[in-house]
Amino acid sequence: MIRAGGIAAALLTPLLLAAAAPDPIGSAMEDSAAGWNAGDLGRFMRVYAEDAVFVTSRGLVRGKAAVAARYRPSFAKGGNSRGKLSFRFLGTRTIDARHRLLWAKWTLRGAKVESGMTTLLFERRPAGWQIISDHSS
Image 1 (cartoon, rainbow, N blue to C red):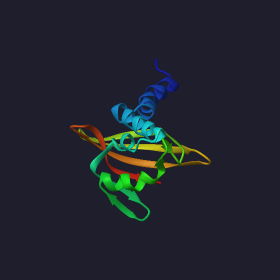
Image 2 (tube, rainbow, N blue to C red):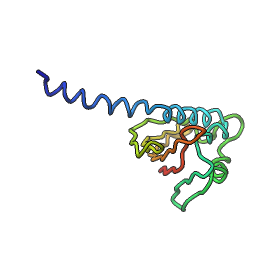
Image 3 (cartoon, rainbow, N blue to C red):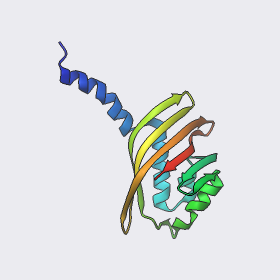
Image 4 (cartoon, helix red, strand yellow):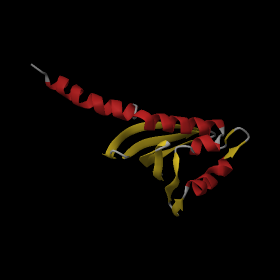
């Protein structure tokens, strides 16, 4: 006989694991954060596809080079002037064999603590899972 609590735990455990460790996408995001924290713009941007689109409050930023240009002023002197970046993965959704969504909370810890949410659309490409759309607030 299965108790109600056992059923709930059995159903929730895979969801919690997916939120905590979203496979190669999570690894790519952790590496990106490490690049940010080391002041390495190239490493931070490695997870972005060449044709990535970044959604901002002022409109769309199209292309990896334009996204990198937007972040470049924060990278100087071997670090990132905006603080240390970390992510808390909230979940993923598989769209199809080549596309996944990732929801996460980002936090920057520097002179002040800032945080927000991000929805990232990944596409599996020859170089691995890459961000093709980034909507962060």
